[in-house]
Image: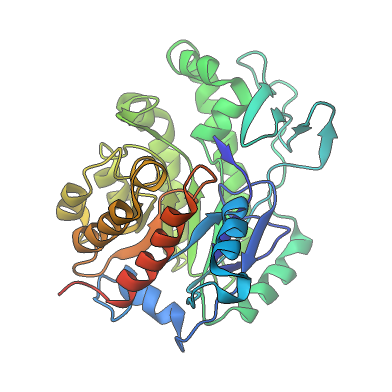
Amino acid sequence: MRCRGTWLIAEGRRDIPASGVTNICLFRAGESTIVNPRKIVLEAVAHRETDVIPYILSIDLEVKEKLDAYYGGPENFPQHETFFAGTGCEWRGAESLPGNRFRDKFGVIWREGNIFHIVEPALKEPSLKGFECPVLIQDDEVPALAEWCQQRADKFRSYNFGMLFWERAWALRGMQNILIDMVTEPAFVHELFERLMQMHLEALDRILHLPFDSIRFGDDFGGQRGLLMGLPYWRRYIKPRLARMYAKVREAGKIVSIHSCGDNSEILGEMIEMGLQIFNPAQPEANDLPALKKNYGRHLTFEGGIGTQRNLPLGSPEDVREEIQRCRLDLGPGGGFIMATTKPIRPEVPVQNAAAAVQSILEEARKGSPR
């Protein structure tokens, strides 16, 4: 699933959206009252308690407009801090097609909308004949990325690779086909993932010398109840290659972060052993977050934790506030927590609930780590 444009309290480049945010991605700096936001994030990731919990406000552009009207103008939006700066690969390409469609850099045709849908996979058969992976980062982009990092030295800076292995594979072949291929065409699947890994390793070689704090990999492994492809196939095809990439990032002194929606509980321990340090979005609807904190909280920083499937769209403002308070108490002790909604606050969320979420995130984060 690919999402529409989003307003984030973070800084970034509009021409290189953050992982998982497509269409128009608008980043604006907040009115920060913190001298060194980056240091606070690094302290949290190092599992030290902080006086302010780092947070992200992720809001759909349509909701942001409603909130501006609710507050009486954008100038009245609650004062907030900016902890993060993110940039990353643009995978969409520039070929627009009739019928609100586009062809991405890999040859996949998508239909735009509230959520992007695949119209035509690039690989009609389980074969890579004639297929070439694009170059993700061109040499002439590197100086601009270095300048981008330098201008945001007080922020926690991430470079984001979206649609890494699993998502790229089902985009190229179609979901049903890649699941069948994993059983019936193992040689093809190994070759496909090997090519994708080499493409990303080459991109990492171009940027790991830059002063990014974190490299984020985006790949939605989980559904509501476990891994979409199943644990044996994740271990067979994805884990060995992911381990190589994590190791490369850790050897360069960077923090390894992943965005993976759904229930990842089967593999969190293995990913930690491979070098994972930050896990996003930690969806409460698909995970037992107190159990994950108990089992993995000494080694893993949870980013997210505030659900967007239940209380935000369907509950009351008080329900929203209570969930955010509970999230801080469940995930905040001992550091290792970045407070955020697990998805952008969406248009179906009543504006009163959206306002309650914004205010509660700010209030709870400013209480600091529970002690």
